[in-house]
Length: 401
Picture 1: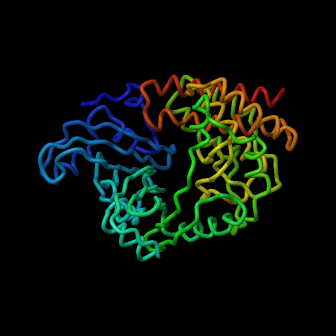
Picture 2 (picture 1 turned 180 degrees about the horizontal axis):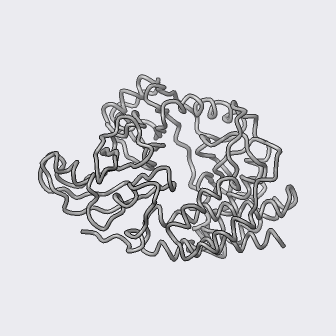
Picture 3 (picture 1 turned 30 degrees about the vertical axis):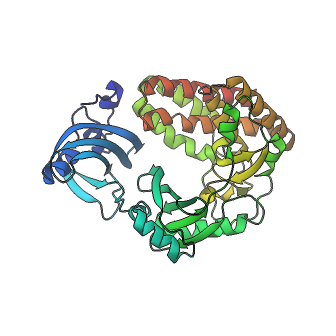
């Protein structure tokens, strides 16, 4: 049995008993029960991703090795406690109800299973007006209950299928239609509202992150990157999204439970960060960082993931980009190159916006990204989480100076 990190096995949530059930050292009862119901036995089980909002919900995606029964082999199972989507298989464990499903049969994403079935995906694309003939599909990204991206390769240029909760897909289609007039976003090839599925044109180029990792890679001028989010059109919805500063307290609640040794540092950061103080709303990308930008020959040729496009604070897009780059620098094979490019971007934004505000929002972005090591259960997630909280404090200190 693949061992959990000892710190993972110790976490608990007094308001959400499912946390202790799903993150125990033994095989979680709901997972074992589902496998046994099909006539098999769990040989190995370990969490791949953990999304936990204290007191509200926990979602754990497991890789499970099964011996015997209908599920024999390697399985991808998801278990949810707290907010369980309708359609999940309900399993009782120690007086607590947990929802379970096998990927790709996500009850909140009815388009995922069809998107990953080669025959059904080809039929879907034909129905959407983009016939492809024989295709092969591959799951490229997946957040249980929230979204997925499936690549489709076949007889024509590549296509991506974006899968969201059905109620959100029409809005995403409109985002692509609106932004395609002013930005190099992928063209929408059509959508299936009942499935929450949309087909997107594949774009050329490689991500700005990959270009940064290549010492010989040509980089777009920082002004070209900045211009992507400088003057976005008005979004269809006038409902503002939570700013990066407003998101920080929820992550602080998580950190106090998963890295209690950092509680004082977390409290200090949240207190010094303060509350949102920018009342002006502007159009923002909402998730602007180096992996969302495609480059070729030193030019921007693509801009991805516009489902977060909406009303927000002017400094959030610069702050999120700078926060991501500051964190990527600590993992990059070319840290000096990443640092230099980030400084060039910062110099441009410093001429356009409030310098303190940009650094403050970069600090908040790094703080939220400190949840990443726990979410993907890295080998030293407690140490990495603490390091990221400290990096966020460094940026906040810079803002305060």
